[in-house]
Image (cartoon, rainbow, N blue to C red):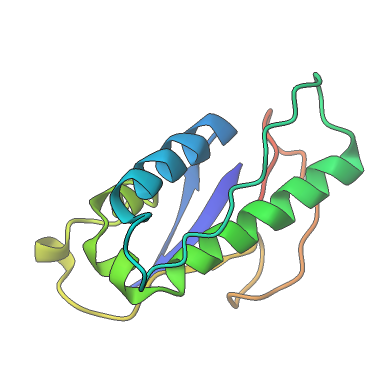
Length: 129
C-alpha cells in the first residue's frame, strides 16, 4: 500500500505492507488502549486467502484509509506518538516544529479527499489514506 502524506507543505509517499499496519496497531493499542480520551478504531482483519479479489482489495483500502484518518483526527496521538510519526515518515517534532496535523491524500489528487481507485504501476497495491 502507498500512503500519500502531506505535512507542513511537503508531500511524499510511504510504502507499507499490511503487516506494518498491524505492528503499528499493536503498538498503539499497547500505549493508548487505556486512555479514555483516545479512540483507536479497529484495524481491518487480515484475509488469509492468497491474492485478494478486486472488490476485497477496494474494501481493505477503504477500511485502512478510515483507520488511519481516525488516528490523524486525534491530535493527542499525532502529537505524542513517535510510532505513528515514524510509520508516516514524519520528521521528529523538534526538527519540524509545530504545525497542522498531517493529511493523507489519494494518489493523483491535489486535495486530501479526491477520488481514487486501483493503479497498477508497481508490484503492490496502491492506496492512499
